[in-house]
Length: 192
Image 1 (tube, rainbow, N blue to C red):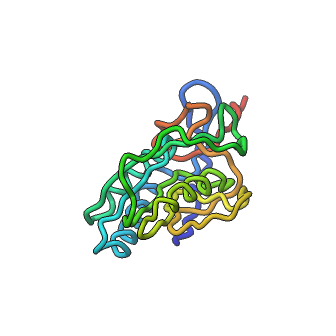
Image 2: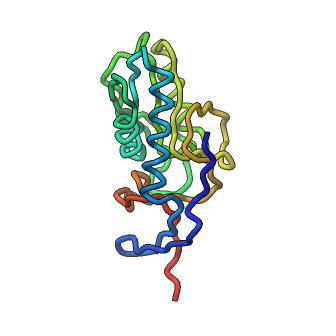
């Protein structure tokens, strides 16, 4: 895994209305790292036609960009779970909101997440999928928040390991805001 550093320049960008966002990873850094992950996945699955399962909504941009960066035949599907509600911390109660459309029995499945933090959602999804007997099941995430882990979960492909910062942008949100930012950032209160 490439341990690229977050953006060295503390760029504050207005993020719509509200707090400013300190840029952690720029759009260019994200694109380069996703390309690297796509090539790694292509090497690992060159003969297998994997199914990339995106966890909605936070992984949508990562999953689609990762699929475009993976130069082999693959399929896409989506799953949606809820553990956050309207807050910034997991409630600990994970619910399945939308299930897969594909049968994953005997398929090579790559679960795509924007960020793995507590591990609760990923653990829940992996248990649901394991019961469906895939040929293999791995996890790809752009951000791995190891310090926030409550349950150990496997992370097979990770863009970056980060601390406990609450991140937004590139699909990740704060109460449904900031998903469309082209970079990943940390919310900062406006400075006077």
